[in-house]
Length: 195
Ligand SMILES: [Zn+2]
Image 1 (cartoon, helix red, strand yellow):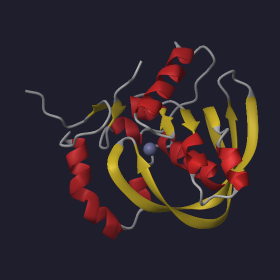
Image 2: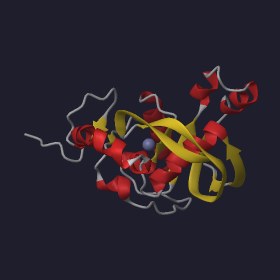
Image 3: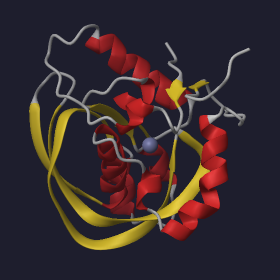
Image 4: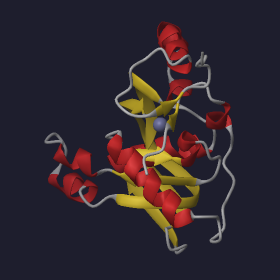
């Protein structure tokens, strides 16, 4: 089932997600719905707060980035298999130089801004079978993880841009919260006045 994606301004996007246990109600269905919702919106990642649940769960499918001909063959091969579910994730370490990448977010449609993040993350998480993994990941896959991980910490990419850029997009962000946009997928707007 495709779930409505929560728009910028909804308080759930500002909550720090809580860990879940294996008996979280209908977890398998929730994960499947989140993937369907992500694919329907042509996203490469989706975090549970974006569908209204402040829990530590996100899904990633980086395979669209594997088409990028500017990347090395090694990175493309890696991205072409990067589909994962992250439960109760914890970033243990971030290292390397910060590099800019133009990020977008399904909760903030049609806005893209350069965000600086470090190259490499070490992350500990449970997969959909509650099997524990600790992995060191870099490049674009790390970038997507950092963006989704921020969501379960209540952080949005617009928090990480310069105050000048933030001023320039202020009106656009208000329009998103007020539902004065035409997204290409189903959304839920915090300030939409129903008549
Ligand atoms: Zn996002």
